Image (cartoon, rainbow, N blue to C red):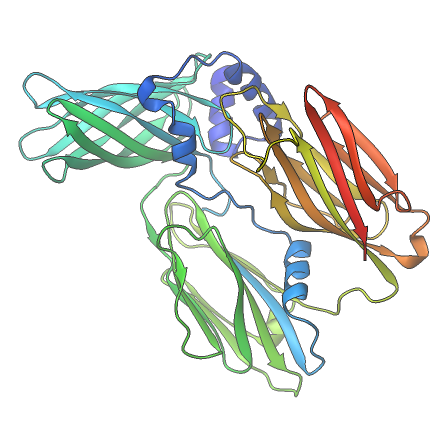
Length: 448
């Protein structure tokens, strides 16, 4: 595959596995040293956007079951809603320096970009105009370090005050139809220049979208299980009654979401549930919620709202055996598991699988930019993408196994080049395996 195609696919498909492996090997091993002003780009850019994964149905039900015990007098429904760019288009953070020309009516810029979900990056450079009215323009080029891929960028370069301004524009891929939006801010820190920082997204708009809204039931109660990817000024509003939850939410390159728990009396009443946002609203009967899955596009830019609801049934009874399993891989001597991004990475892409029963994800451990739990298509397997340098990653999961199959069920952990199969009699305890090059794999399991 041509390297230019690799980048185009990476930016539009969110770095599919087949693209990522090649891109990391090409870019990661040949990257030139970053300029002094951009060496902290990866750490700073990643802090501006949450990459928390959207939990699967099993994880949602498991989490809700722990927080809301069975109540025979009530019907309990978990409603999961998210809004924005829900397909996770690729996002790049960038920053750099700019300098005025001798006349002060324009200048040049130079910076570095980096995908916020993968170890792929490059440089950008160009020129801008800045006339007396402050309404300027910029044009430039970008590339991928270690390859011939790249394209152009262009847009508005605007002064807001004596020392600050913003830019807003587009990017494309040379010889390809793929393109997207970019935006950011600049500041003048010296007489002849300053710095800039922004984000680019593989979508047609980076403009803020208002998703302020509320969830309301005409009978019973609604509670917040937790929010997902709420950042900056996103928040749950102070509550005034037990039947309504309101929030404030703005999305740009990302999506926001929330997990809510609705409870209705089992007395035959038929409450209605409404979900209203600044972009779209819905109303359902309680009966419609049990198997609800709605996905609606709200504008031409591709912003979407997705809503699913699940009837919270009784948790496994005595006929099931529960195992709580913690797994870690990488440099286990690291205190908090954090990685130094400049080091060579070890890839731990893999899965956990049980032959009978089901697995539920409790939480990810030390997952950072680029580490992700993949969407699930069955109850017995949890898959992930993970890479470590100086730290470790891990997962905390729960396994439920029918008591009748306790002796003929196997649990498999595959992470990178490591694979081990446990019988359920062997699984409980603390197991550590040497994985070479200073790395190890640890499995801690408790029955019950």
